[in-house]
Length: 634
Image (tube, rainbow, N blue to C red; front, side, top):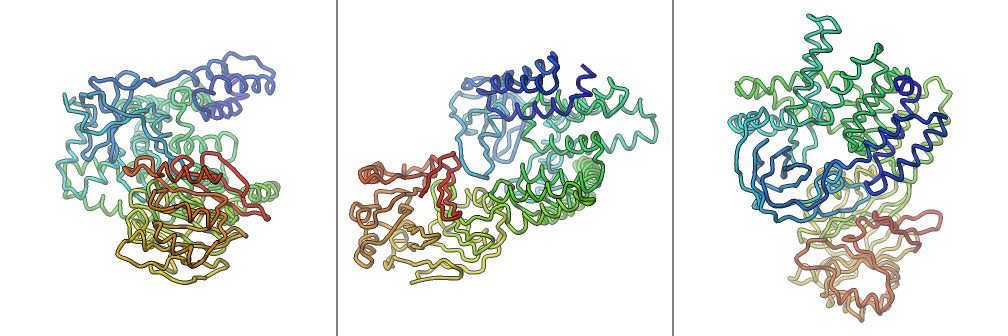
C-alpha cells in the first residue's frame, strides 16, 4: 500500500477530492466510476482505493428530525450555535451565545434549514448540510440543564469578565467566533490560529529537543488541542500528518496518505480553505514546485475559487502571518488574566488586520472570461517566468473584470425586496436599481464582489422603503458611487443606456410614487415597476399607450395591488420577473397575479424559487439564466 500511495498518491487524492464534491445520493455511483478510472489509468486493481472511497461514502450524520431531549453545545458562532446528541445535530439561533460543552434541553420544535440560491452568495444551508446540521430552531426552544466543565467553557466564562471592547477579538482568537459583518481579523482567517499556536511551541522546542523527540511531543500537544477544540479540520490536518510521518522514513512520503485519510474522516474538508491552503503548500513542496511565485499562484487560485478574493498581503506574507497569529493566540490567553496590560495591543492588532483585509482584490473566475484566461495560461507554459506572468494575469483579470466581460441585467435574490444590477459589456458603465434590505446586504455584496465591481456609475433608489433602500449608505461606503438618483426624472443617461421614469404620480404613498424604470439594452426593452400600484399603471397606460416591453419586473413583489389586467394587456410582456422572499408575511406573489400571467401565457421567474436571475447579452443572443440552473433564450 505504501508503494501504491507513493506512486499514485496524487492521482488517488485528486479522485477522492472529486468524489467528496458529489452529493450523498450520488456518491456511490461516482465512487464506482472513479474506481474504474483509477484501474484503467494505473492498471492496478488495489484494495486501498476501494477502502478509501468506501469510507468517503459512509454517512456521518443522521438525517432524521431531532427529537426532544438533552443536546450538548459543540460549536458557538455569532448568531447561532450547533448542538449535538449522538449522530443528530441541530442549529439554534440566539442573541446571547450558548455555553460551550453545556447540556441543553430541546423541546423538539424545529424546522428544516431553509435553502437560499444565488450564483455567488455563501450558501449557509449547504455549509450546514456538509456539517450534518439539517434542522434549526429558535433559542426559546432550548433551556440550560447543566454547565459542564471544559477548557472552552472556562475560556468563554473568562472572556465575559474582561472589558466588553475586548470580547470580539478574544472570542475570535481563542474560540473562533467570527463577528458578524467582519471584514478583517485576517490573522486568524481559515481558522489557523490554533495550529499557529502549535507552531510557536514547535519552534520553541526546536532549541531544546532533537527532531525525533520534538515530533513526538508536538504530536501529543496537537492531539490535546484537537480534543479541546472538538477536532476541527485545521488541527486534525496537522495531527494526521504528524502521525503519518511516524510511519515513513521520508517526511514527504507522508503528505498524500495524510491528505487522503483526512478526506476519509472529513469529506466536507474539500469545501474548506483550512484544508486546501496547507494542502497546496505541501503538494507544491512534494512536486518540486518550491518557488515563491508558484506557491502564490496556486494559493491565489484557492482563494478565488472558495472566497472570490485575493489578498496579496496575506498570500505573500503567509508564513510570517502564521507566526504572528500564534504569538497573538498566547497574548490573548494572557489578556484573560491581565486585560489592562495586553488588551490595548490586541485592539491594535485587530485594527491592523482590518486594514490588511481591505487590500483584497475581489472577483470570481466563474465567468465567460475564464476560457480566455485558460488559453493565455497555457501559452505561458514554456516561458521562463511563467508563474509570474500567470499570477500577474490573474490579478489583472480580477481588477479589470475580464472574468465577466458580458453585459447583463441581474435581479439579485434579496428575499422580500429589490436589487437589480445592470452592467454594460467589457468594463462599461454599471448601474444599480435599489439595494435590498439591510439583512440581505451580504447577498448584494457577494454578487458585486464576484463580478469584480468596485464602482457603480449610477445608483437609483425607487422609493424609501427599507427593502429597496436599506443598503444605500453601505453601497456608497463600500463601492465608488458616482451618481445617486432618489427623485423622479424624465430621462437619465450617463453611458449607452437611456433610462426613462414613467411614473408621474407623487403622493404621500411611497409605493404609489416609486420610480418606474424603462430602458433598452441589447435590443431588449425592460420595464421595472418598483412598488407602484394599479393607479400608477393606469397613468402609464394613459400617457404611453402600448409601451413595448420584453421583460417586465412585476410591481411590489407580485402583490395584487399591481400587475392589473389592463396593464398586462397593454404592455404585453414576453417574460415576467418577480422578486419575492420565501418567508414574507405577505405571501407574495399573489395567486391572482400568477393567474393573470398564466392566462396570457406569460412565463415568469421568481427569485424565491430560482435565486439570482440574470439576462446575459452575447453576439446578438439574449440568454436568461438562473442560479437554480434554468436557462432560456429571449
